[in-house]
Each structure stands twice: as C-alpha cells, then as structure tokens.
Image 1 (cartoon, rainbow, N blue to C red):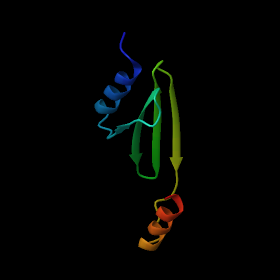
Image 2: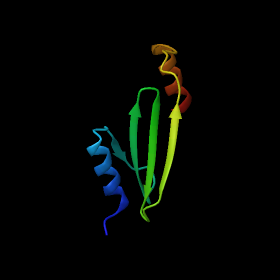
Image 3: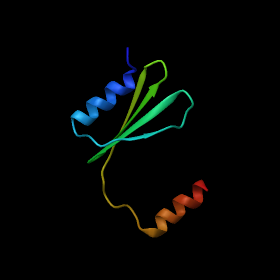
Image 4: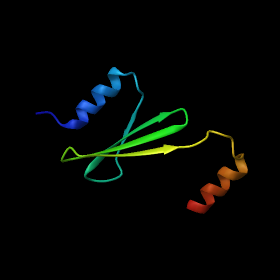
Length: 76
C-alpha cells in the first residue's frame, strides 16, 4: 500500500494544480497551494492523516515597502 501523500500529489498533478512541499514538523509534510483569493495548507502525517487549513481573503494591496519592513521588524 502506498502512502496517502503520494495519492494527493498525483491528484494535484493530474488537476494541474501547482503546489509546494515543505516541512515544519518532524511527523508531517506540508503541501501548500495558492489560488486567487485563497491559500490551502495540507499537513500529511506519517500515519496518513491529513489536516487541511484554508485561508481566504481579499488580495487588495494593503501597504508598501514600509509595511513589509515593519512586519519583518515585528517578527525578527
């Protein structure tokens, strides 16, 4: 039996949906997809379980270089 991560990746590729793989936890792989007005994150765990988070919002411009510098300073 193959891991559900591979099935998810095959489905995304068949649908021509761009995705990025990353890791932020030792027990999962993060599959991230970005669409107009929405970002989707799927954590696929080593046991095959999937947790899905959806982030919806406008894509309005909310600032300029000053804003990005403040965001970096707040988190740095």
